Every structure is written in structure tokens, then in C-alpha cells.
Amino acid sequence: MAAILQLSPITDVPPERRASAAPRDPVFFQDPYAFYDRLHASNPTFFWDEYGHWCFAGFKEVSALLRDKRFGRDILHVSTREELGMPAPKPHTADFDLTEQYSLLNLEPPAHTRLRTLVNRAFVSRHVEQLRPRIVKLANEMIDGFEHEETVDLIKSYAALIPAIVIAEMIGLPAEMAPQLLAWSNRMVAMYMFGVTLERELDANAAAAEFTDYLRGVVAERRRAPREDLLTHMLTAEQGAEKLSDEEVMSTTILLLNAGHEATVHTTGNGIKAILESGLDPQSLFASEQQTEATVEECLRFYAPLHMFTRYALSDLEVAGIQLRKGDVIGLMLGAANRDPRRFSDANSFDPFRADYANVSFGAGIHFCIGAPLARIELQVAMRELFRRLPKLKLAEPPRYNDVYHFHGLERLMVSWH
Image 1 (tube, rainbow, N blue to C red):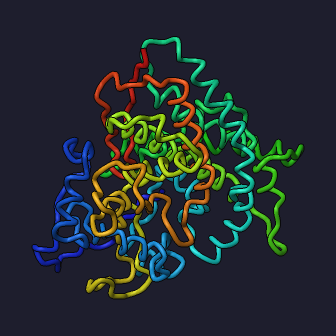
Image 2 (cartoon, rainbow, N blue to C red; image 1 turned 120 degrees about the horizontal axis):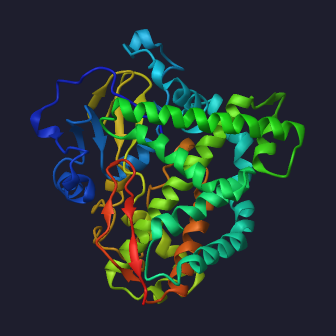
């Protein structure tokens, strides 16, 4: 996810529409829901002082704006840097920026349409459903590897590995590369932190360069010897007379690898935490296929893995009584929308049996998460198999969240089961 920045300061905001919360304050990022509760009770459409742009916390508003074509993830397809007063690219993040240049997440039509059409086939539900047996086998192999221990960090030893291996194998990369892919990804996503430092930028750029160099070699090898994998599909698929360039293939591969595990890791960890803290009988939450699906959807709603998705206004416009200029940024607060009391009864309660379940955790509109069908299967399998194998699972220490507000994920999840 690109770090979109407000290009020019907005100053004409009445005090009653402003809200303040420091994204790097541990009190805030450990529990942003207290802030969201205040917003829902007063101004769910508000100007966030620390970010310097307008934000939307209501479920109805977020859902509608995700689909609103007056906003986009890119702005330079309708304007120039000079017109917007946008700073020049930073030379020291050139390798990182190259990986984002053709990212599906940051493109708008027609470039987005072309690229998504060429990639989408691999992620449709009927295709990824065929991966379920492999994911079940993988989950049990992971549990086999640690069940003899007294305690384990489920993030490192379970939640992070399953989606990383699955997406690597889909693309056509060896499973044993998963730890290295995770390391590159973790270094790169540090770029999205609020107030990112020069040191973090340099490290993320170095990771992007290493990742790209590795993929360049794999792409060259696939051109010489095609296989039945997603990488070969991307290199050979055509839409009309068009094919993807090597740069587009590498950028898409990095996005799929990074996004293909990031949200799933966080939701797996957050969901297990929610179940263990709820006092509910885990066996009842996975008693049937239908109930397993409902439990996962409630985990996605209750603890969204991504809490803010930013977009540019593509022209001067008005929304919710707010005048926006071309190039202004808005923040769509997915985590807050999922806890909107106007949409959900008892919104702050974890209830996998609720009748009013829904969520915006995978987004909506043209940027709806392409990997959502796969992520849902991974989550269903990972949680169900874990609680089936380790029915006495319990927290071994209080979980703490990472200092990355956008990505609401745990530092670690220490558990025991004896």
C-alpha cells in the first residue's frame, strides 16, 4: 500500500470537526477502538490533525467512498506533480518506488483494468478452492513442528508461514524461500509507518532492490523454461495484443507476495486472540463449514487487518458537505467502519453468531482485494485446524500490537496448550 501524502495543508477546518490521535502513541495503536468510539459518538467524518486530511469512520460512508470513482489511488494520471505541488521522488527510495510503479493497488483505469484482468483468473474462488487440501496439510505440518513445545509464538511459527508459503507456491517460487520473502516484505512495509525515518526508508529500499534482483533472475529462468504457475501465466497471458512487461510482472509479484500474506497474518493472529479472550467454546465456532465461515467473517470485522485506506480526490468536488480540491487525500477508516454502532448491534462485542455480519476489511470497488477468496480459505483452515489439534489453547502472555497503525497486527502471540 503506497504511502499517500496530503500535498498541501488544509487550514479552514472548524475546531469541532477536528480530532487528534498520535499514530505512534502506544496507548493509541494498542487500542484504536477507544478513539473510534469517540468518533462514532460525535464526528465520524472528521479532520485528523496528525495526518492532515479528512477521514471517514462510518460504515455507510466508507463503503460508498470505496466505490466512488471520483476518488483514486493514483493522481498523476489526471494531473502533474507541478500542478499539485507534489515533491519530486526521493532518489534514495528509487528501487522501492519502482516496485510500486506498476502495483495493482496504486493504478487506476485503464492501466488497472488491463493488469487486473490478466492476473485475476488465478484468484477466482473456484480456482483457489482447489488449494484447500494443500493448506490443510500445511497447517498440520506447522502444528506438528511445535506441538511438543511448552509455548510458541503463533505469529512466527504458524500465522506468518502458511500464507507466505501458499502464495509463493502459487506464483511458482520454492516454499523454502518463504522466510526470505517474509523478511523482504516486513522491511518494505515499514515504509508505510506514520513518520517513517530516513533509516527505515533506506532499509526498505534495500529490501526492494534485493527482492527485485531475485525476481529478475526467476523471470529470466521462466522465459527459458515455462511452468504451470502464476509467474508463467503473467509472462505469457495476453489481452488483445498486449502482454505484461517484465517490470509489470515483478511489481505484481511483489504486491501479491506482500499483500498475499500481510492481511492474512494479522487476521489469523487477531482472530485467535479474539477467540481466546472471548470465553467462547472454540469447538462451537468451527462446528460446521457455515459456522467456520461466519467465525472468520466476524474476526475480519472485529479486528480489521488494515485500518486506513487513502485515496486522492481526482477533481474539485464536495462530499458529505466537505469541499475537496483536486489532489486532496481522504482516509477511509476500515477498522472504525467495522465497529460502527449504526450498522452493527453491540458493535464492540466479538460475536461469531451474529445475524448482522459484514465488513469492509477487503475493501470494495475496483480495488477490492484480489486475494480475498484465497485469504478466506487460509483463515478458515488455519483457525479451524489449530483449535481442532490444540483444544486447550490459551494465551501465555498478554498480546501486544506492532507500532504500525495502518496494519493492526500483533508483535507476537505467545500461547500454551497443556
